[in-house]
Length: 84
Image (spheres, one colour):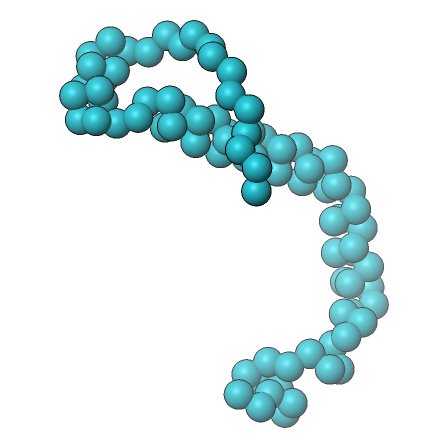
């Protein structure tokens, strides 16, 4: 995997918290980068779920009406086909 391009930015952070982080040797840029990555992933996931909610609902409705198409071959601890 390649190295991501970096861009300088300006952040406004709590001064005491920033001083504490620096005194503890915490890489503030790395922490901010990781937190921002997680936030972007969470928002993208949430948007994707919202955008596809109708499809999920239609699939659930279809399963309610017709049952699962693989129900006869799905293995579970309580079914006869379970070998585990």
